[in-house]
Length: 262
Length: 298
Image (tube, rainbow over all chains, first blue to last red; front, side, top):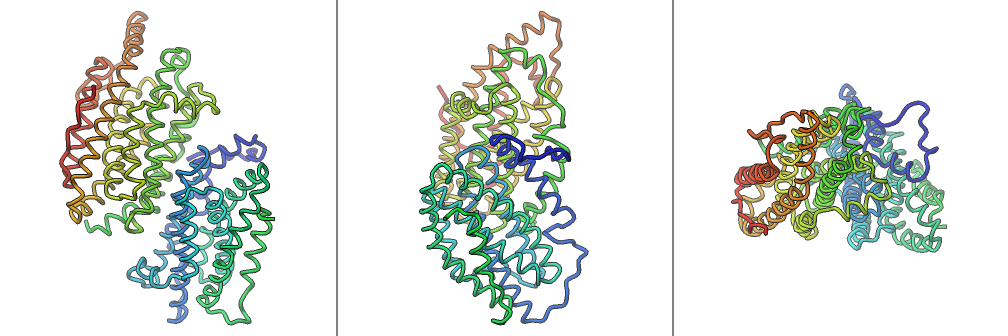
């Protein structure tokens, strides 16, 4: 696949319509993912050896990865449902690329579970799913089912992606080498998804500033579920209270920075 | 092959290797960079408008496929099926994108794309899509996959093959664009046949409903063919007469034993309809569904 990625090419110099067409195209997506997925089937270099891991560490990593799968399945189901709600051609194409990204994330995490000796990954995910995350999933899918584009994009492409970006980046900093590589590829995708949500909602709020109040209300409903799920992350990663990073604060700051609710 | 091994062939990783890193490598909008629509097509309003009308039908079909494949992700019973449908969603989005690009290359302004599609999409093709999307909207995975991956994709596969045969010499850009979509459709049809066969065996009570859907979709498909060939026939005849008068050779293109560059539009329509229906019979038979003849379109 070839997109216009010559050194002189700068998408931000395009007018708005051309910019959206370019950055939401299949070619642009493929040029983006090809860079960090090439040579990494299932998200990691096949030559990279797994480090020895004791039973407790392995078990905690399995629980962590199972909950990453819950988040990614949520994103897969929500993004596929959003395709039909997309207000224009560019958004539809972008969401189709996101559907494939999210399915790839589930696939690489399930493959990692397989590497760790889990025989039935999907059953293990169901057994170890954090109830807060499950509740978050239900809420997001309800928004999609009732056709609420703004709410669903906000919940999925802003809140869920910000949560994942915060957790994955922290985990990548302390993870074993194979898990780290897998996470790096996922993080790169999440940034693109977050950018779409920020861009789409930002344009809408510029036309309808009153929408901020509505998004703030959704955030007030969902933030406790996100923050509650972080407690599970600390436990799953085996962090003592003293070692616990301020993921919750980082997440809140990341959402705040986008300025969509204030 | 065990079902788990079969499903592994439809993973995202395998798709990345086969499709964007495989037959789409070094292409732009599905064709070699630099290729354009033929000058004589762009200069001939009659031909250009006929090409726009045809491309609109392709976009309408692909939009339906995109809505159906994305809508089926949530209804899929396992991750492997969800993963395949995710790749199919992206394939269909790519098809929408490349045919939309063709519409623009044919002179439709970008801001007029949606209105052009709405104005020119064949009403029977729209109904064909509605029958399918009703099943998808109800979360009916089995009927949705049969309707999408066997009926819709089976139809698209043969239509694209026919168009590719007639474009190979006259319009390499369009022919190359179609090559990639044909490769995609082949994969989609393969998934439909393989995945649904086992589900139909588990749920034989679903057969009657699925056969009704197939008959209804087939009816609208045949009516679409009739409308499209009736509409394009005069243009095709005029082009052939003009080529003969100017001593231009339009060449030949054999498809299923017929030279479609020389055949009448009625013969091509009958050939296409017969080919698609034979494919339906074969593929539906493989999953335990008996092909149902639709009512004959008026």
